Structures are given as C-alpha cells and as structure tokens.
Image (cartoon, rainbow, N blue to C red; front, side, top):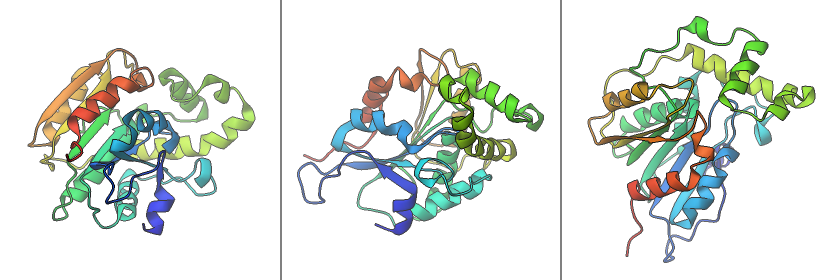
Length: 257
C-alpha cells in the first residue's frame, strides 16, 4: 500500500487476505461532508461488514490530520485523492459521498473515468444537488464565522454541544472554513462524463437540497440511474444506516461463489 493511501484513507475493520474465502468483492471509498471526517462512515462500514472493503477519505485539517491546512479547492482535493488511490487494485472500485463529499466523489469519478479501465463500478451521492441544478450564488455562502456556525447548526452537521464550546469550536472551525471556501468556488465538471451507474440518496425534509435538484444527477451518466428518498433531513444517513447498507449491498458486486 502506498504512503499516500495510508495518509488519505482509513479502514474500520480488517480486510481478508487475497486468497481467503472471505475476500471482499469490491472496495467502497467514502467521502465525508464539509467539516466532517472519515469517522462519519464507521457505522456504515460496520453494517456492511467484511464482504465490502470500506475505506473513508480523511481530508486534511481534522482529527489525525489536524496539523495540515485544509484544501480550499475542490478540484485540487479530487486530484489529491486520485493520486492517493494509486494504481488500480484487484477489486472493482465504488465511490460514495455525502453532501460536499458527493461533489468530491463525483470529481474523483470523472478523473478516474479518463484513465483506461479505471472508471468506478458505481457512484453513490447523498444529500447533494446535481451539478446541473441551479446552484447557490457565491454570495449565498456564509460570509463570516457567525453565519457559518448558524448554517452548520441548521443542517445538523456538528453536535450543538461542540458548537457551543469555545475550545472545541477553535479546533473545528478551520476545517469548516476551508471546506466552505472550497464549496463557494466550486464549478462542477460539465457534461455527461460517466458511463457507470449513479444512485442519488436524499432526505425528504432536507432544508438545503430539494428532491428535484437531486434527480438532476441523471445528467452525469449515460449509465443506469436511480434515486432513493429516505425520511429525514440533510443527515438522514444517521437514522437509516442499515437501510443504506442494504441498498449498497444490492448495488455493489457480490462476492464470488
């Protein structure tokens, strides 16, 4: 495994050896939301179990990468993740991203699709407007820390207790600022650059992402597309982890035998 993979990717359960009967059928790489960390995906990884090799991206500027500056350009972030993934492994690759992570996953998929034989088997996006949907005007993004904290609190991205603790706030704010700067300047790769299946997940009460805007992900692929609407808000995944795991099992390549 490359050093870059060790820096960028986290696993939450052991992976069986290449020749063992329990060898995972595919690798699922997960991308967290703005201000989030790889730990967000731990519950899903445990639900999926050893049949899927789940890795989660750890962005700079949080937890064990706290001493690194956040990457404030989403395209640059995608480039770095592609570099970290390195040469293709012996398992099919699938991508799953939540909120900002959905945009990062999309841009990673676009870059991999340009490489021979590297396009993911599946792109799953959660709680994110389609690239073709009317986007937020740059002026709509938080202009200062007070607006940023209010937005994060409204979406439920971070526990209120952490936002009310000045010491904890000082730790998490730099990553939040960096991620929202990346979002504010982000211009999606246009067109229909993918051929892999795309599945879009969303909550029916998301205050930030209308269901109709999620359906626009159809325009990103010439392959199969589906939408799954869950009960809940922007972080519906928290209450529907088992259901999302079941859905992913049905979409990912099954173990041989």
